[in-house]
Amino acid sequence: MKNSEFYLTTEDKKALLAEARRAIEKLFGLNVTPPPNLSACSDAIYARCGAFVTLNKYGRLRGCIGQIISDKPLIETVRNMAVSAARYDYRFPPVTASELNVISIEISVLSPLRKIRDISEIELGKHGIYIVKGSRSGVFLPQVATETGWDLENFLGHCARDKAGIGWDGWRDADIYIFTATVFSEDEME
Image 1 (cartoon, rainbow, N blue to C red):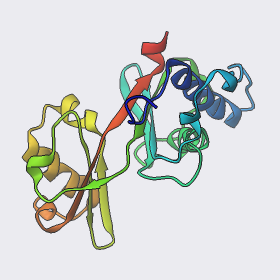
Image 2: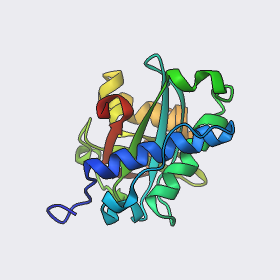
Image 3: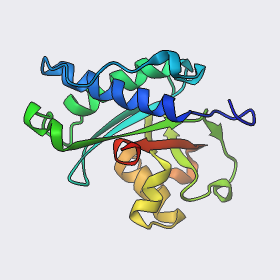
């Protein structure tokens, strides 16, 4: 930990990325990526926190699945989310073995959720949002606002309508939680 905030070392990030890739390779009976040296990692890889694994192919989204919170160690959550992103993202057909050499993995490790009272507490590009209304919920990672160029109204509206299924203005009477994410990818670790 650094400054009492959740912190991942470079070794932690490399190990988590390697573990994600190994989990996907194992789906196809492959054993290409060597196991990470966990003894070089900090205790952060065993923290119980949420994580998303995003798969990109030629710079375009190919799959993304995650958990907002987790009761499992981070390294296990990442392993499970990598397999889910490759196999179970309903927006895409399952990843094939022939795609593995052109897929890049990005991991977003989430801070604990914090319920907000006013949307002015949301800092675009810094905070992700988790909107909950009844049994419906939706999430956007912090980088969604940056990647899309959306303002706050669009960020909330798209999450409410497209992710939570509660309509464009559904966020207005929903519970809104914010979180930060430590985001890193294979591309930046090369």
